[in-house]
Image 1 (spheres, each protein chain N blue to C red):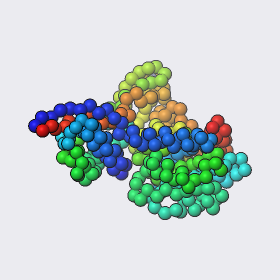
Image 2: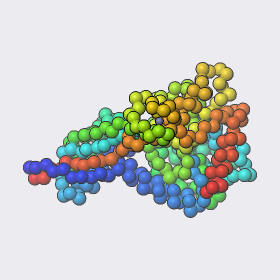
Image 3: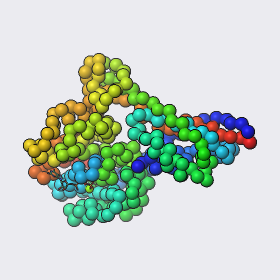
Image 4: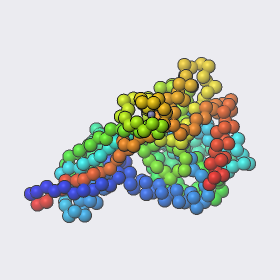
Length: 115
Length: 219
Ligand SMILES: Nc1nc2c(ncn2[C@@H]2O[C@H](COP(=O)(O)OP(=O)(O)OP(=O)(O)O)[C@@H](O)[C@H]2O)c(=O)[nH]1
Ligand SMILES: [Mg+2]
Ligand SMILES: [Zn+2]
């Protein structure tokens, strides 16, 4: 499961930004994940519960914002959200789709507690 | 106690991507073209590497970095085929990452090769998310896997430069619609190069090896 490596990376990023912000505790982590990133939310949560122990992320809520794939036809410029793996253009039938949205994969923000 | 929101906007794969860029610089310094091969277990990654090495003997100096969960079986095969090879054991990891490749380069004779294959861990999902510093990404589908795989694993087909369709010697025995399969793959990736081959009969191998030679020459 590559979610293990991914979760380690998330915790590393959050620890760094929490320290920069002078916060010792993080209450929420806002993630933006495109549907082309093949990441399973539940797996990230599973590893997170283990790996966050003893870090500022421990006990934080993981908030997943999913971004749906948006395709653009290279022939006619039509844009659409595909419903299957058939990416042929529904407007002109061309096989020249490019994903212009859906590959996002980043930590958007964190919520930190000050006391 | 109060809560405040701290903007981060940092890519989760950032550390891997930075290492991959470093790897790429090393490959470029040595004038080596690197091909990352991704496929399901048993699709024929090692067979394709071996057959390519054999056919390009004396024309192109080829090496291999072999990724596997455990064992050195594939590395031993490639060495026996006359090409330098180094093994990375991921110890359970489902994909290679850029750091593992960087470490393997310490024992790899980059000056003695023109082209390096990285055989990724057998898996259709995870490897494609991890850049290794490669110049070219190739997936292999094999006929016995069935012609519906692009429906189930669209991401890998959408993110490679070429797809080798291996084991076409088995087409007469299996319900695999090669035409429909290629059409489906092209709908996911209009620019993809398709190479139907058989590592057993050698059919289709010439197109594949000349494509590789052109890549290596451009380096
Ligand atoms: N019929 C047929 N069999 C093939 C062909 N290419 C490979 N094979 C067989 O498929 C099996 C798997 O091949 P490998 O090259 O080991 O596959 P791999 O993708 O490297 O496998 P892993 O490294 O274990 O994931 C072997 O028994 C090969 O002999 C082919 O073109 N036709
Ligand atoms: Mg192999
Ligand atoms: Zn169109």
